[in-house]
Image (cartoon, rainbow, N blue to C red; front, side, top):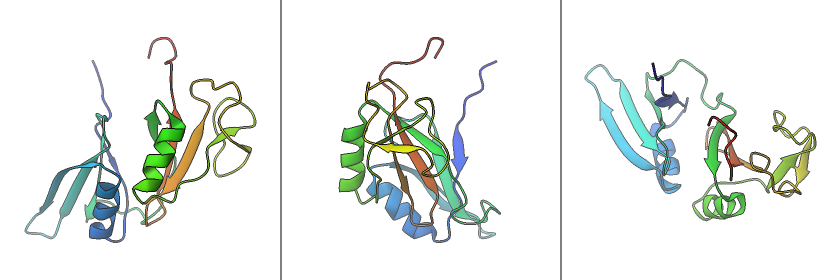
Length: 147
């Protein structure tokens, strides 16, 4: 049976500010509704993604800004960095991990610039939303077998 990741909940403090931020990045607004009991759900989807994010009022008990390691995948890390920056994200410089495999949490073992060999899966940028939820953007130019 296929199981597909459909939605990721992102805990935020100010729903409208977050909606503006993600829409400003070019993400598609899929829904914004409020129920009679005060539940408000906003759903946006990054361009080309089958998975969306949701946030709102009474959607999550997690502390605003507590999500980290949310990953987006792109085919050109430098182009993605430029677009995120143009659209208002405070995005890091392009980096790769000193160990050459996967990035360490936080800024530990970050080396400036893209992977020297430009290997797929090895170059990144990071940014946070207005609440501090942390995103990693990873360059993938060739998928591992079976993907």
